[in-house]
Amino acid sequence: MRLFLALALALLSGPALSETRVPESRAEISLSFAPLVREAAPAVVNIYARRVVETRRSPFAEDPFFGEFFREFGQRQPRVQNSLGSGVILSDDGIVVSNYHVIGQATDISVVLNDRREYSASVLLADEQSDLAILQLDGASDMPHLPLRDSDTVEVGELTLAIGNPFGVGQTVSSGIVSGLARSGVATGNMRGYFIQTDAPINPGNSGGALIDTRGRLIGINTSILTRSGGSNGIGFAIPASLVAQFVAQARDGQDRFLRPWAGMNGQAVDADLSDGLGLALPGGVVISELHAASPFAVAGIEVGDVILAVDDLPVNTPAEMIYRMSVRGIGASVTVDYMRGGRPAEARVTLIAPPDDPPREELVLGREDRFEGLRLARLNPALRDELGLAANASGVIVLEPGAVGARIGLRAGDILLAVGRYAIERPSEAARLLGQASGRVAVQVQRGNRRLALRFRV
Image 1 (cartoon, rainbow, N blue to C red):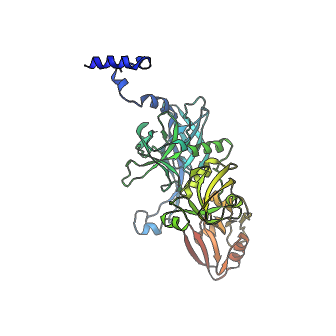
Image 2: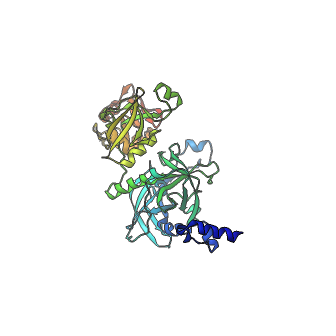
Image 3: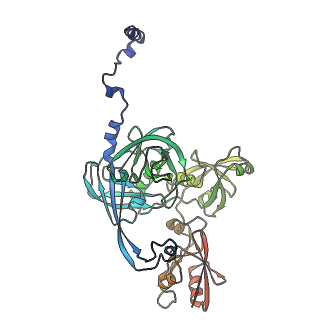
């Protein structure tokens, strides 16, 4: 009966099917990723980073109560920290991408290839906010490397492979699918980014490794997992390859710090409660709550209260997603922005620009004749906010270095001076004058992160 069916199919199929044949081995019947791994694995490397940090040895360090109060007590001592992670070679001349948290502040970086060749590496560009770093292998040529795929073409449900060095056991491959896109609620590095979600197991040591598709193209850099136990629970996150491509382009242009286009605005995601009041049929987009006068969006005619829906026809539903869309286009690009105003759709053409270094920073360092010798101050502007990773609405006079006396009264680098006594501060020269004239008991108002503090001292 089986032979009869086979002959019947052969007669009915004609020439088009006559060239097919029955699989002759178990290997031909089974699905295997082996050829794909054999092609891609040589471009995934192990990274060993070494850094020297200064720590304080305090007799209260292990005490759960006093340890918090005496963190700065004791003499500073240098200590060597070692980190282990993964990386991906992106060009034949040895350009490598990894995570910032793998190589950040490292003094010595070694990169070991799959065939056990070892290279020293130098950092070309590193960005803590995006948790990405671009390295250059010293003296490398004819390197195996992976091509980049446009992340906007990735779809949920695609098969993926994660390649890296989990737990330092050696190069390991795990498989899964793309389980989500546009994930922007996961913290990594110094900010909440924009990620591809996968259920391919990602564990410590996989950071900086490759997430590839079934054609061996890089679709993301594995960076973090969502876990309560410390192990992989099937939810991992990768930084999209499109952002990696922009990092590589800027590194090749000689940039040592990643430059993001400046939006000059604050906004929030539109939820169900907001959508009714804004005249939207469905929740989505980003409503603008603040807009700088020099913002390229303001120049293009967009106003406070407008709802940004898409950038170049790609939807944006969170501020992090909009920053990502702008970042992959790059400074100098012109994008089409779809938005809603008063319930009506509109469109604008926006040219992406670098954060302007205006108003002037007016950087000031107090000298020996000043009471607060070594105190270094600057006036915040969009460029300085971007360099320091501060919020878009941060303004005032920032402490770049506290100096010895400033540190003793509690000032820290990154503090924003708001007032000395009852006098508000807007410029570094005003801060220097008020601090120099202060006498008796003095209170300095500062913004430290999300907290507003009063530092009290006697002069």
